[in-house]
Length: 324
Ligand SMILES: NC(=O)c1ccc[n+]([C@@H]2O[C@H](COP(=O)([O-])OP(=O)(O)OC[C@H]3O[C@@H](n4cnc5c(N)ncnc54)[C@H](OP(=O)(O)O)[C@@H]3O)[C@@H](O)[C@H]2O)c1
Image 1: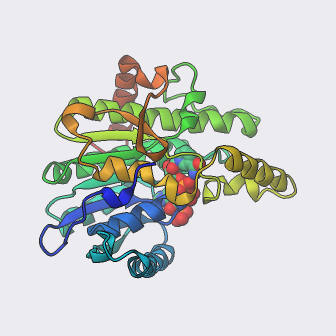
Image 2: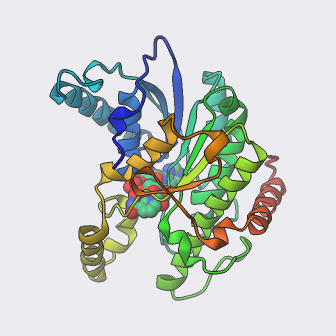
Image 3: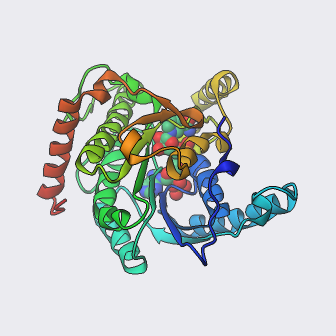
């Protein structure tokens, strides 16, 4: 697996590198933020709850110090100069909140080097946000689309990288589903997965379209791996009685096919920081566990369908007063 210690280390006093990450409090996002902090990045941690994000920031700072002390003397990590971590309020279920978060970052920074669209929810019951979208579609895709478009001018002044966490689950979309399709049918046990797959396919399609429209910005999507000990599965494992069955099932999957929370962050880190990947050679590509180049589904790869999803998203945002 790719070793994040081989990625470049920056001294924020000499070369200020700025990253924006959504969902840094979660399993994969936590380790992504930790490594980027170790590599000297100024990180804006966008999350819903200030108490939770600030607690995680303290944990990352502590863990970073421990890792440096524990690392062998001749490693680059031993001499790492840490970046910094700052909280930005962001609830992806609210488009106005996305606008405010982007505006705040614009006020604070002249450029952004990397945007990591990491936050996500999976297989939750049908719910509509106050913006009128199905909650998985908005959280996983539409709000990240808006955030990306708002930060694009800043990204173009920096290292110009947009990394979006999709999922192997996008393959469940076996034929193209228009994004206006809401799958509001019972049973939730089946149709919630279709809604998840649709949101994660849309994220890959959006990445490919963004890459075509902005060849100077490196836009990548990825599946981080099966990381079973994160909160992503908590809706199912917390169900009364039957939750035990789901917990056991997820543990079994994790045992045979899973990777650790930290290994789940490796793909993102490679895409976000590696100098081996460039906009000229790799734009729009899809990666998998450990940062290995892979292929997304034929549905996600179809550029006509990707264009339809893009146009639908732009129209729906416009209807709600958000010009992109
Ligand atoms: N774990 C896996 O096996 C797996 C597999 C494939 C893809 N993925 C993708 O990888 C990404 C990270 O997953 P994970 O396993 O680390 O999940 P996780 O532990 O549940 O973390 C999800 C993160 O998203 C944040 N979030 C959720 N809803 C939000 C909202 N409305 N506004 C802002 N932030 C919100 C959460 O914040 P709070 O802490 O405040 O709730 C949390 O920080 C997700 O996009 C997921 O779909 C994961």
